[in-house]
Image 1 (cartoon, rainbow, N blue to C red):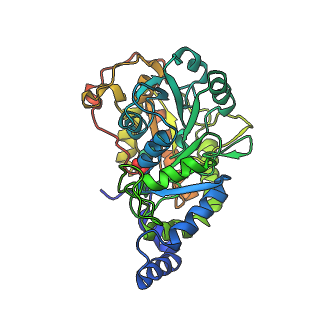
Image 2 (spheres, helix red, strand yellow):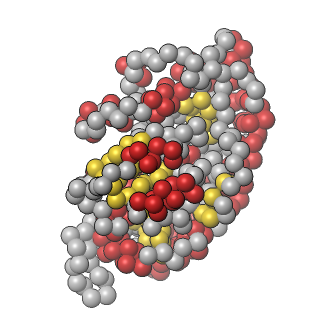
Image 3 (cartoon, protein in one colour):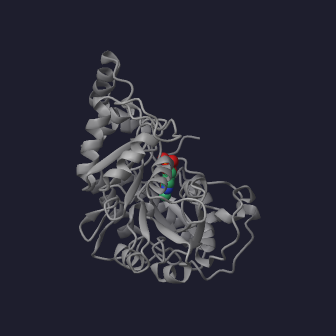
Length: 395
Ligand SMILES: Cc1ncc(COP(=O)(O)O)c(C=O)c1O
């Protein structure tokens, strides 16, 4: 189906950057720069400077950034790692693949880890906290870092959705032992396929991640230091990402303007909660513009009929997927969010006219029925909501 307002618009995105992107790709191809070359190093250097850390290590996905951050931090069998379930599954899978145990806690009103629940989750086996800066908003790093310091825990930031977001002036990915980014095509900085990076000030962690991504091999000596992985960020992807990184500040400004426009149009609508949480310590970059309503599914259907593409992240709590083997941690808010959240179209290509149209459609839907406020409706079965949101196109 072709939407009047698509969630994202990859064709237009490419057209806007075409000369620079084509030149970057042509340069790689004509010079045979395909694997582990100058373009990768340049991008890593620019990314590290952008985030405000010493090292950035390009890998082939946000998942591998997380996995290597955990391995590099020494997390392994017998360790517990506290994180959230209101996240993309890769956050938890990385912990499981590091052979540690994920301990899932609930999120707060802003969809990020509820730091008030951390203390109760700490045990003698806890080694780390993986906080997830969801939807382009950073977690309360002051509280999280303070609990971590009190218990000598490491903090790893899942910043897959938060490149450029700040907390007290510091960028996501610079406040823990490692930051983990995804360059999945529909992220704030997206490649033309999978990609990711780990950021850190820790030299040995950066080195371990660089070896792990290349089957454990030190390229200078040929020595294999670990059983590693084939997980290098492709050179061509790095060249494209380097071009796009230059536009990132402008794109973040655009996202924030679009979010403000949504807010102006939707503020005060009964039964709709908006993602503006008003904390001056943070600058949100709005990877997703997530509204919340108890009548999410009918609003979504109405928007689809109007030609507005939306996404729901995530329609089923992670522990309800039997294949993941997670026990039900009893997280009320996480469970409720699965029924209530809806992401509206937002990308570097979204226009103010499109926002106005989306707002008009939402207003129509609200006017046509009295929408109960989020959280006021009794829970319902997930059976009718079994569609997997996955990560496509923009988790
Ligand atoms: C919060 C979060 N963590 C981790 C990931 C994993 O990144 P990737 O898809 O690049 O492996 C994603 C996105 O896909 C994400 O949104």
